[in-house]
Image 1 (cartoon, rainbow, N blue to C red):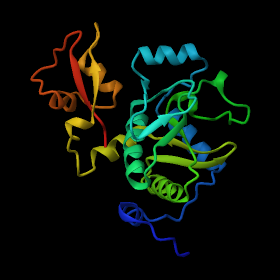
Image 2 (tube, rainbow, N blue to C red):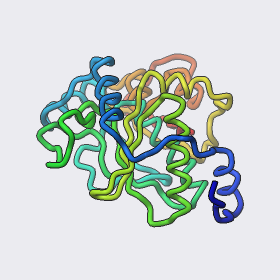
Image 3 (cartoon, rainbow, N blue to C red):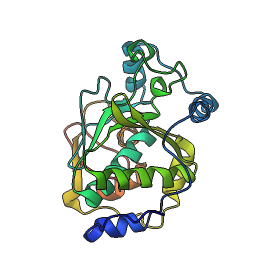
Length: 245
C-alpha cells in the first residue's frame, strides 16, 4: 500500500476510520446494470419530461434539495430527488465539510429523459430520482476522503458510485430501502443543536406527515424537535426542521 500524506486534525481521524476497500470507482456496465435493476425492482418511474418531474414533486414522491452551509447546487435544472437521496446528501455533506473544510457541490439530481446529455446511458437512473452527481474537488485530500467514503458505503450495499471524467464528477445512485435501513441502524440518533435547525413556515393545506416526508424525516422526529404533542399544525406556524446527520 502506498503511504498517504499526513492529514491534520479531524480529517486524519475521519480518513483513518474509513479504509479504502478493494473496489473501484471506475465504473462498468455491471454497475450500470445494478443501478437499473434496483430502480426497476423498486418500480420507480423513469420520468420523461419536466412536467412529469413537477407532478411527482406535487405528489410528494420527489423532494426539494435547497442547499445549506454544508452543500450547494450548481446549475441543477431540477433540484429534486427521492427523500432517501436528500437524507444521503445532507448526511454526507455535513461529514464532508467537517473532514476537509469545503462545501460539497451537487451538479445534477433528477433529470428527465428528454433532458439527458448526449453521452448519458439509455439505462441511466437519473430520471427516477435516485441519483446525484457531485463536482470533483480540486483538493486532493477532499477527493481522497469522498472516494474512500463512497467505497465504504458501496461495500455496505446501499449505493453504487462512479468517478466520471466528462465533466469531472462523481455519479452516485442511492438504493433507497437499503440506505434507509442502514441509517436507521446507526447508533447515534440524537437531534442536532437548535442552532442547526432549518425553519419552515406552514402553508395552508400542509400536514405534519407531508412536511416530514419532504425533509426526509419521520413524523416523530419532527414532533420532538418542535415539542408537539399531536399532529395538528396551522398556516403561518414556524417549524424547526432538524438538519439530518
